[in-house]
Image 1 (cartoon, helix red, strand yellow):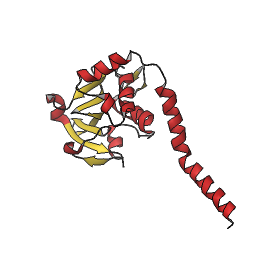
Image 2 (cartoon, one colour):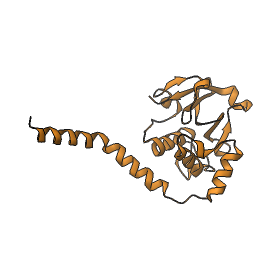
Image 3 (cartoon, helix red, strand yellow):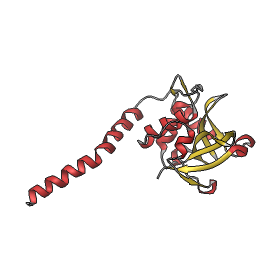
Image 4 (cartoon, helix red, strand yellow):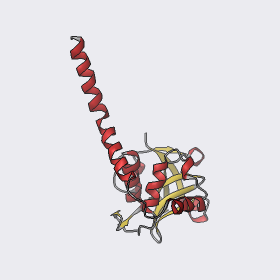
Length: 178
């Protein structure tokens, strides 16, 4: 193979390999430029009131996405700003922040992760809860400092603490996408 042909083949391979990441980054930039629903100070105050510092986050865009969803009402099988359930919320966050598509419900998401203990949790890990009949029935996203974002049936999208008695009782394990 001639040097020019080899260069062209390598260039084509690299373009095809990195094109999905480039497209995802373009989508991220477009969404990131949207104006927040509240001023930056309100955004910072919200997370500071939950003992979190978005500016020191590994993935600050995770916090922006969570904040954009906070207050969205709960709707079983919902996946829009008009209403969302816990697995829909986790799927939307993962799609928008990490460009990763996750399957259906919480038990299906569980099949796609590597289980981790709560002592190993990192920002962005998925939390699994066994609330109904000792099966995985709720998910959320770990934010750090024992806080996690999720879609609560009663409250909608909120940030909660893993040390709260209710969540401590039903917490099963964390999971990380390989």
